[in-house]
Length: 385
Image (cartoon, rainbow, N blue to C red; front, side, top):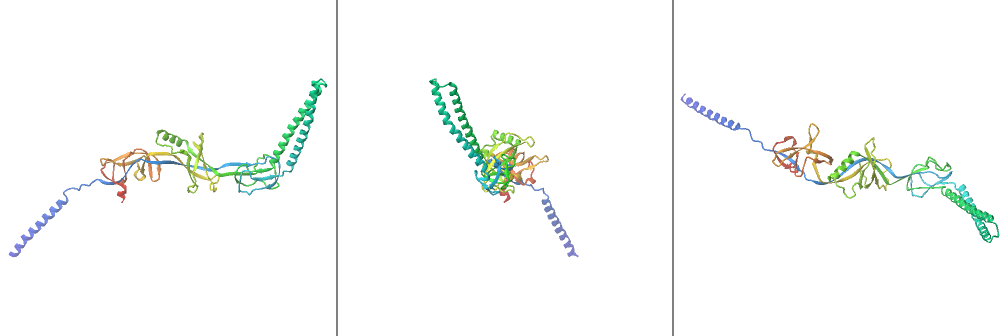
């Protein structure tokens, strides 16, 4: 019994010591909340850079030259000297109209001219002889006047005969129908043996020159005004010959390998679309571009020497749809900047207002910060790593 009485106080002391220890430990655990440091965010430092600005315009191709070949004299087609769809050179023979009637008319005109010319010398000699006789009063004045009139009629007959001979020669030269321009021929509307008439409304064949080739695109008048304002303010500068350099994208999106040049810009705005037509010229040695194809032209507008570009992931929009960016200020606090965007260049936005050089735009960790919060700015590349 004495032994048991000694053990009970000892156990009580141990339990009391254990409870005190647990109470002290719990008290230390609830001594206060832990202090959380600034949020680490990835930033991109904005620096002005030189950017060539371009605009993409839709358009269609059209032939450089088009010639609708028509006969200039009546006759039967005796020969067709080209293959449909082939390339021909300027002056190449296309059709041959039967020249026999025109050859005969030409020969007749030459004979008539020769007869008229043969009468002139005799009339001239007679007039000269009578002139001398009139001076010595050996003949009457009327005889001389009649001889002089006969000479003038003979000379007029020569002029008329010469004009008729030239007309007959021209008509004969029209019997071979030649290509007025180099290019590719289309479908022939007549065959050998067909009767054609001069200046008929239906062309015999259409020739189109495809090298070089035109590309006609449209640009809105609002974009033209914006471009002029940018150039006037100095934000954009012409590079070299400015609008001359043009690139092309085909219907399937592949780039055309050869560069073109801007030919001219129309001065009239289409009232239905509010756009202006721009005509460009592209070399087309392999006939890749055909008339009527839909293409997209990439036209160089100018060079922005101090462009501010920011990654698209660093730009968000508010409930109204206005873009803004969060910037890590020099004091380590987040600032909200409302932006004015010009266009997207790849994966970046071109910013015209809202950002300046050396601004640190937050692109990583946007969901964890709010304007006014303290952050620890880390370069985005290092944060991603």
